[in-house]
Amino acid sequence: MSSSCCSTDGSCSTATTDRTTVTEAVTVTTTYAVSGMTCGHCKATLTKVIGELDGVTGVDVDLDTGRVTVVGTAEPDDTLIAEVVDDAGYELTGRA
Image (cartoon, rainbow, N blue to C red; front, side):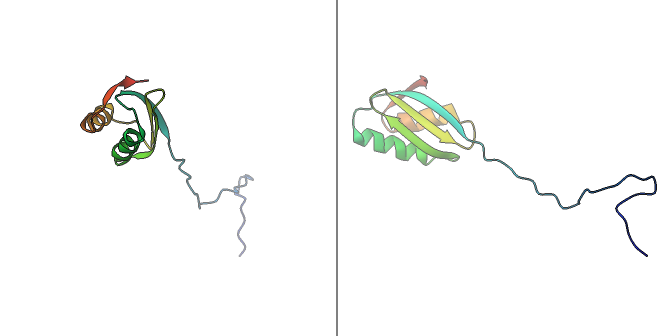
């Protein structure tokens, strides 16, 4: 007895039952305006405290523009970002 991929009505099936799902990583980039940053210590401090938050994969502090860019795997919690920035001695004034 032989098996065939064709059904009795003449249609053919080439579908396989082994499927692989690929999930693409989501990256969200958000830029904040932060006041009070003046030196390399400020940059290092904010990079550390923001970088320790869950879901944050990168932090870029630009002293010249007063901007902090946060890269993560999901939309950031602005209240939590503001809290750690304020606790570090700076002021998050909003999204840039």
